[in-house]
Image 1 (cartoon, rainbow, N blue to C red):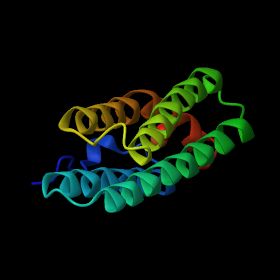
Image 2: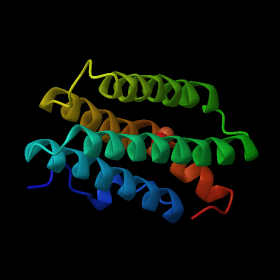
Image 3: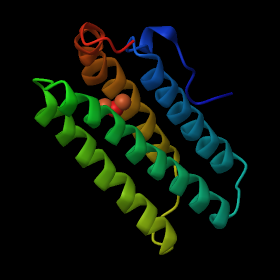
Length: 135
Ligand code: FEO
């Protein structure tokens, strides 16, 4: 069973960003599935690298729109992105160096962070972006 299931209640009302979030959910599930069946370190490295890259791509897309439309909560939102990126980059480095293995604790952290961030901070920008014609 998938660790995370997309639900329309997570929608931020902007299709492009919902599609990004769905991809992030799929990558977290891919990492979880690989962990469960004990895939090799190389495979785990590859999935985590793709998750990290996609997270950065997605954050920068949101930040680009926030900057473009002068979103009032940009600074706080970017700070959340930066802290998460730093954490995931550290996981990636430690996994590569063999100091760390993907565990259920890490998976729960990733899942909870995404759900809380999307349902909380991301959903707040929805009406603001909609007002600027982004749907
Ligand atoms: Fe969808 Fe703010 O990350």
